[in-house]
Amino acid sequence: MIEQAFASTWGLSYSDFEFLNRFGAKSRVAIACQLLFFRQHGRFPATRGDLDPDVIVGSSEAECRKPR
Image (cartoon, rainbow, N blue to C red; front, side):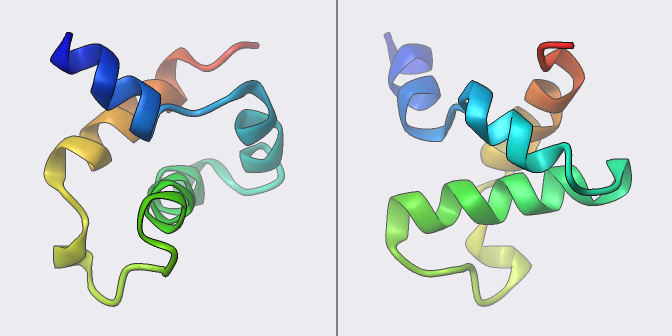
């Protein structure tokens, strides 16, 4: 249940992946984290410390599993 709540809040949609594909592979995880943080908090993270490490890991794993 906790994983489902996390995924519904911090998950990426197909349109998110479409958007992220515009950027280079090295930038996608950082941009995904910023996008998800903005959706949750209504602002961009001021520092890297604003991002929960689980969000960074989840975003990088999602990038690896993205639809092709």
